[in-house]
Amino acid sequence: MEFKQFDIPDVVEVLPRVFGDARGAFFESFSARRMQEAGIEGDWVQDNQSRSDRGVVRGLHFQQPPYAQAKLVRVAAGRALDVIVDIRRNSPTYGQHLAVELDAERYNMLYVPVGFAHGFTALEDNTLFLYKCTNYYAPQSEGGLLWNDPALAIDWGVHNPTISAKDQVLPTLAEFDSPF
Image 1 (tube, rainbow, N blue to C red):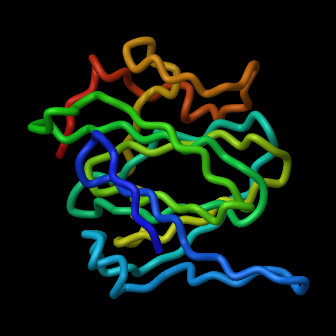
Image 2 (image 1 turned 135 degrees about the horizontal axis):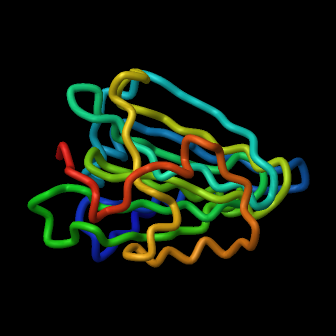
């Protein structure tokens, strides 16, 4: 596995070593030892999966403490633009975002630490998005940021996105009081 660091501290892209031949491909999608060596640690307790068609935007979501989650995310089919926003109050990159294309053909993954709002847009129909989480889902701790907050200036790369009613009324960064 290769690990790519970014200007936003603690965020890591994981690029697994893929073995391909005429039969298809094989890769190691998770190794606690290798993840720890790259600074990715967590007690991984829950896996989630969603399916989205092209143009669906999900996010920007997080869980508040004490149910905060780190996530290891990847695409099993299709492609997605994965977006995270640093919402750690004392971080020098507070309010900054990062976008990484996750592609089933590249098998790449993104580690999203606690203290980040997370979302994605499907770039293809039938995109399967997988989340490995360090805490169980707790509906009472849900939080989020408005996906199209002008202050964040996120280029989702889609016109007329499909967005849930819940995601359309989340606060902007200026209205937000971070619990992190």
